[in-house]
Image 1 (cartoon, helix red, strand yellow):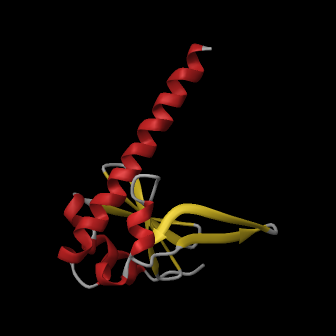
Image 2: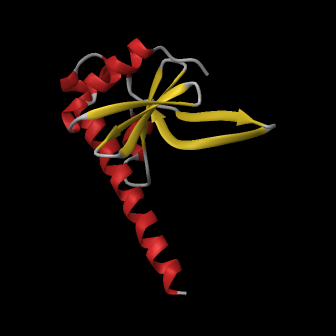
Length: 122
């Protein structure tokens, strides 16, 4: 998995309608964050956006595909889908996809926080 820094910076600019997007190198690719929440990743110069039950259908209808990787003989499907083609053309076309991905990331973060609070009660 190899990704160019130039593509990562370009992607951060495309997604910047959600707020200040920061880029962090990870596992040969990049994670894209807004306010400390990862909502996109880049692997092999492909931009993937966070999905969950609420927004997965819209990504599937747009022809997006899930991020899948293999490690130690295991195939893992992540909760990130490729950005639909038009989203890569401009900030305006990327904006609704960026907002959707960021909202999914915030929902996932809230669920993790709730689960952690509940586990401490036991």
